[in-house]
Amino acid sequence: MLREILIVLGIDPGLVITGFGVISVTGGNAYEYITSGVIETKNTTNLEQRLKYIYENVFRLIETHKPQEIAMEEVFINTNQKSSSKLIMGRTAAYLACCNFGYQVNEYAPNTVKKNITGNGHASKDQVHIMVQKIFCTSIDKNKTNDAIDAIAIALCHLFKKMSKNYF
Amino acid sequence: MLREILIVLGIDPGLVITGFGVISVTGGNAYEYITSGVIETKNTTNLEQRLKYIYENVFRLIETHKPQEIAMEEVFINTNQKSSSKLIMGRTAAYLACCNFGYQVNEYAPNTVKKNITGNGHASKDQVHIMVQKIFCTSIDKNKTNDAIDAIAIALCHLFKKMSKNYF
Image (cartoon, rainbow over all chains, first blue to last red; front, side, top):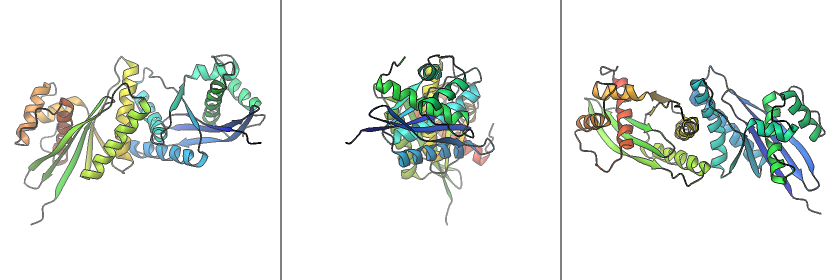
């Protein structure tokens, strides 16, 4: 029997660290953790090279894992305008790699992700990480940074919405 | 006798309208206006397609005119955070097309451009346009929007800096 598989790439964007997580679900709610990690750029490297690096790495992730859907965390402008501007530029580099493949980018606010993974929009990072591991019945490598696990949570939030599993 | 030619692409970025101007200078201060125009996207189109469109058109401009250098106007975050965020995303789409070709993007604040073209950092748009036409000894098509002429001014500001002609 053929089962349809839905692969989702989740992205927690940034200029310094872009987290990514690839997960899938097949019929029967079989969630599978595929991979996760971070794309890092150093602030000693010029902005042009950092943006190019993020773009190219997200592009490669899409080529490798061929997700059907992509989810990305929303970014809000804070009081530090300069750092906000850089953050949005880093995020746009990842966003544009998706656009250039023809994807729609599904955007989720941090609180929406937390609420959908833990039931509480103000949950701690630890709580989110515990729930991600429970749902995938796997202990995700402790060396994974928070950003990678956040990216898995973003992908999972999108899966829940797609499957309308009590999506908030 | 061979003369070195320096071609500069100026970009006045935005999500709705991205102005561009291509100019050159050869030895003996021979300024030449090559082309200018705008890349427009409609707000009825989704963000993904708008960013892709800007990216692809800037990419094509670079392929066509092969500038040695690129100059772009700086963007500041204003009180409307949502529109600022969109503006930065539009700008980053143009920026990234340059990065992916390996260019350094030379950034100039609006007042720096005005000061270098007219001598006054608070000059009116009309004043900037008059000076651009004077310097190129040409009457730039009246149908060109302000954004296209602003982009020429940005390119010219960069040329002045390169040539250290009383650059402010």
